[in-house]
Amino acid sequence: MGVSIVGWAHTPFGRLDALDLESLIGGVATQSISHAGITASEVDGIWLGQLNGGFVPEIFASSLALQADDGLRWKPATRLENACASGAAALYAACDAIEAGRARIALVIGAEKMTAVSGAETTRILGNASYVKEEAAVGLTFPGIFAQIAQGYFDRYGDHSATLAHIAAKNHANGVRNPWAQMRKDLGFDFCNTVSDKNPLVAAPLRKTDCSLVSDGAAALIVVDSSLASQFPRAISLRSRAQVNDFLPMSRRDALAFEGPRRAWSQALAQAGCQVNDLSFAEVHDCFTIAELLSYEAMGLAAPGQGARLLADGVVQANGRLPVNPSGGLKAKGHPIGATGVSMHVLASMQLMGEAGEMQVPGASLAGVFNMGGSAVASYVSILERQQ
Image 1: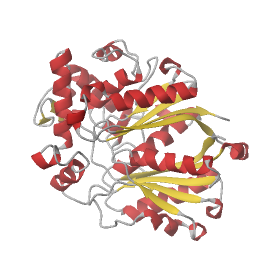
Image 2 (image 1 turned 180 degrees about the vertical axis):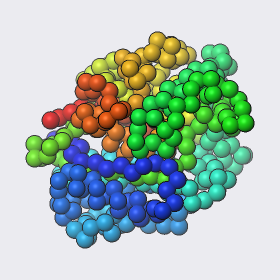
Image 3 (image 1 turned 30 degrees about the vertical axis):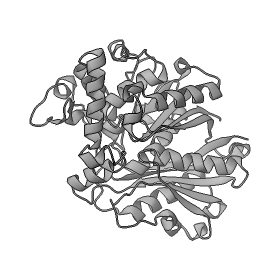
Image 4 (image 1 turned 90 degrees about the vertical axis):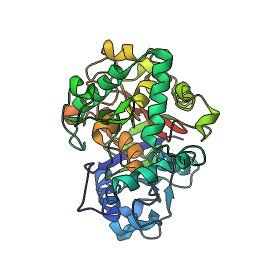
């Protein structure tokens, strides 16, 4: 038994002052149901990916989707949280229910409202997704955590500040072509590579352009038993999926090894019966530019310490052999926590259907999606392909 994506929806990402969490969830629920060409009453269950942690007052958000359509009343609804991988967690839980025969049609939503609190409060909330006893409690923020990882990489492999700037510049250039992106501006390599008033150091060696954006937004998927796929005008098969969780404390692992993502990629590719170079493109979790660099190496595209070559050789550029983050990634698209993993699967599905507009990767037939929670703690990798 397989699982197929047959419909989707996506809001713009950014500061959406006119939309509260309920509006975000309800909007994409309605739109994805319509996009799939089904009625709400045909949905067997609802899975919501959302971190919250204090961004909004609502701590019981799973049933907010029912407000979108009376046909959703009485449907089981569950909220999933796995830090920044909450969206993928929701999708995989829905897939589990379908594969277990407990559902045939699932509504998966990812949503987050982050901008209603101060910047300092945002930093505090996100910091609590670390191992608090050893990290947040001693003042480490997530920029600080990934700055430590970046500095460790530099100490081991040499100064790669310019490499990180190339990643930022690439993703901002890609984001110009994404109508849902929070930042649709090509910043250029020189700006990203220079510390300035507009691009200050956030946590050395990471600059502002090395950090993803604080965002509001939502995305949704309609997922079905693959035996139903022929009934829909679009169908994207989840050819494989893998989840790996590592120890939460960074003190118990080599953060540069990115072992959780490496294992998730290895498992997903093996299950799909393909190699990384068979992929047409990949959407990866670039919460910080160092995370994308380490992702190249975890995917198997480059040996440890050699990821910079993929940028120099153009492999991961929009017109390269294996474009990475043609959507602009979290860096330009934005990073509403719970929405991110769902958004990645929506945008990958658009690419595989040839419906990605200016973002389109020509001839895209096989996609890799990597959504990560924390500092490589929760790692989800999906391999997607067009079914019809």
